[in-house]
Image (cartoon, rainbow, N blue to C red; front, side, top):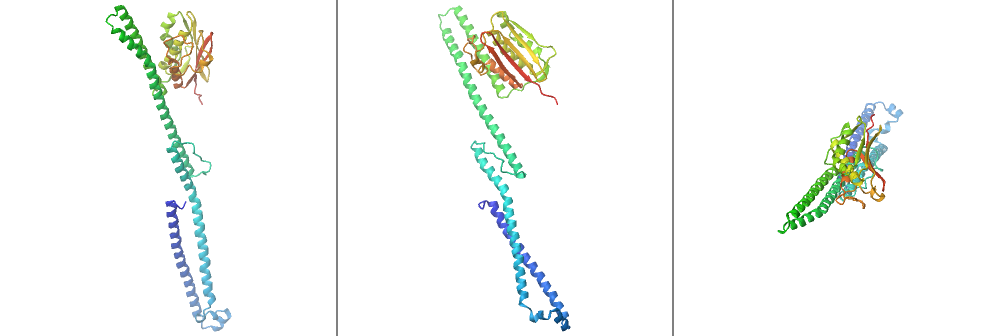
Length: 386
């Protein structure tokens, strides 16, 4: 503590103040004693005519010419007692000041030490146990909140950096195959001996690859914007049935091609706070998977449940189902089950659906029994009114 510049300045200032006050005390005490002596002498002089009275009162021996040495000793003792008391007061004041000074000094030292740890990326040394309730504790509390905000910000920045790296790696990996295929098609087209029918066939396959690449890039960009929080959902309370109908309409051509029936059961008056376009895209991805996995001529069921606490959307198909190992992984980006029936599947639709649902405050889960059915359940939670 003695190495602290502020404490050194306080100590020197305190000593100078005590010294000055000591001089003032000495001058004041001396002035008071001198005044008492003068009054005493005046009383003696005024009473010198009455020797008998002086003898009776015992003041004759204290005449100026016979001033007793005991009076001088008493005055010296008075000075000593007064200054001893004054020194005790000064020392006690200094000790009390040092004791009070330790509280902010201790907190400042803790903040200084912790700040060094924070700069090195260690955010786990914040501790308020030994700091009492006071203004300095409030300061330390605000400092703790500041460090926590910095920690959250750095973690978010680090996660975004990792997410961007993974996204770039995923895009490059997913585009590698269609780009290689396009290169092969281009080499084939450069052959002057190729027939017109074969040329048209290759051009058609190239168009398919380009469409697949376009869909992949757009889906990845949507997913990136969703996971980074760049998209602000237009959530408002509105009927749920039109959203379900929009999703079923988006996959109507796929279901018709396999003679599948999509049965929707939803009360026309059922309301839900949601973004219609984004939720419809989420449901479209799930329904698209259902049409791919469900056999021809089968039914795909879509129904809703609503309670004071939740609104649930269920989508069930009676296809080959999903094994237990894959059920916990199907929402991961680019994950494909081993039994995937679509060779061109990329594994991004369900990941996109999960981000859309969670972005609107909901949850999504899957229940499946291989060879029998698969049911996706989307749950939205209602805000409780007070």
